[in-house]
Image (tube, rainbow, N blue to C red; front, side, top):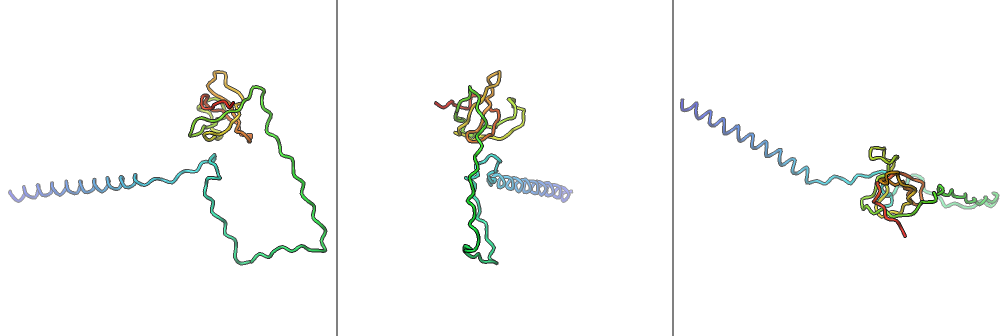
Length: 161
């Protein structure tokens, strides 16, 4: 009878030790996983000049020869510059402003928070305010020097002097 009681107590102690060891192992695993910072995500509207670009390797199998002009060939025509298209015309009540929200703004296709996102504009960027919604809660903007337009929440753009 005494040996059976000792077996029960020893079994109980071993079961608790296994449970504690397993719990501690799982806890240490999750603590170590949360200590590692994930890589910064890249979004479509990120500034590509800030991204690190790797240089492309040139094939080494064929060395490049310097170009020599052929005296018997006819002279080549000089390319004429093509005229650049001007941006869309501005409405008469449009004005320029600067985004004051440091994280930037999401542009939407309609003046509604549930409408689809058409892009974004970074903080402290120049924009042109084209119009305001009827309830004055949304502003239609165009990013300066582009034709990209969309609706943003009002109050996040400061009018430029």
